[in-house]
Image (cartoon, rainbow, N blue to C red; front, side):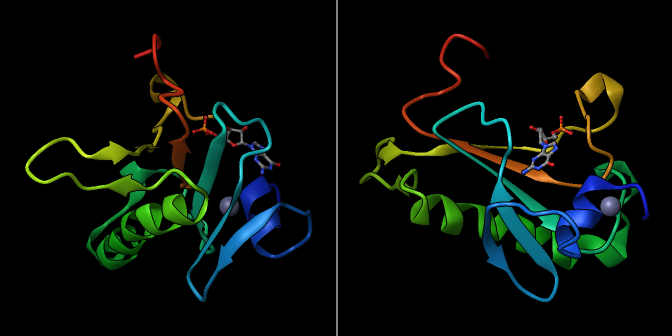
Length: 123
Ligand code: 5GP
Ligand code: ZN
């Protein structure tokens, strides 16, 4: 996609603070972080929204989701499970879809938002 900002980041036409790259996905810091840790996990392939995903994307979507706790851990906002309790730490994962979902960039991406309860008071 010629005019897509995340395609441009994926093909290195414009820079980003990359923290992960593999054959399928990349992850980088959000340019306007809403919390101490604010990452975006993005497929290299251009897909506009979650609503445009199909069965063929299931494995990729699963890998996006599984990457989130790994990167959160690396960035200092991982979750430590408790022993039958809530545990400690943690982060939010978020996929905005469409105008009513608050989507601004129309290239599928998952937010990973962490830090000491950055969403407190804004649920
Ligand atoms: P959305 O509202 O579409 O779910 O989120 C888009 C996110 O992309 C926003 O949090 C915004 O700050 C981030 N963003 C927009 N343009 C850029 C950019 O050029 N580089 C980076 N790293 N993040 C961007
Ligand atoms: Zn794109």
